[in-house]
Image 1 (cartoon, rainbow, N blue to C red):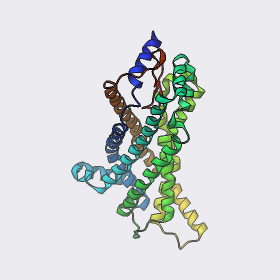
Image 2: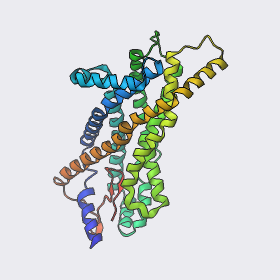
Image 3: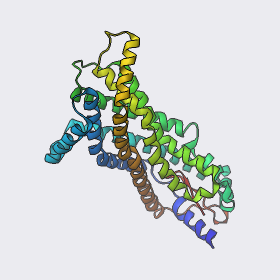
Length: 344
């Protein structure tokens, strides 16, 4: 009876995913990303400004943070209209929206292909009788394939994130740094790009891959896949800051301090000493920044995105006849909207 109930649920939830209009799903992706960015941006602006001023030596992290929070609370309207907030909101809204949309395009293509490919239908029928074939289904999910999976998701999201972040960081460095030069050194851009690639990879690509590996090595945890993925979304972005933090600090140091008058070796030693002194406070601030930005923000983004996807799928399913295959087996046995395999 449980299998029959599960099959019925699959019919109602999955059969019309391919028919759901792609623009409607992408619109939800953008809305989810924009809402999450609006929620996390206020805290992120405080931390980013504090890191810039700490690296410039004008204020400590605590002094800068308290000053920014006081200004925000005294005049919130002016704050939300300021370049400090708008730049941060734009970075995160564009990053989340891009990652969401890339996933949606891949999932929509997979759903459409599955609905029309006999091999895929046979694979779905096998899934309804063999719970161990869930890994086989997931291997066919384009979210984890070469062409439509982690590579396109990583490079597409990183391209948008790097471009937006570099514009924001350049503006922050000029507004809150101490250098009289308006030009940002190429070395600084290189440091920040490496930082952004590390953050994007640990936030949007690695959680899926690591969660998948954990489940593959521990098949009894298949039913806990969602919880495992949430855990990886929380932990991995934070852990990456031990790599991204130093590059962020050095990028600012190259901008604030021109050591061209020193030899290469002397300049290297000078920056190494500065990094050693600033490592703990900057990495701590980066962790405090990334926790709401990509860890908790990532979980919220996934929740909002999946909620919207379920909503539009239900709306479409009430307007279209259910698509079932032979023996009343749903043509679409995969929740392509979330990239998860339906459990039974």
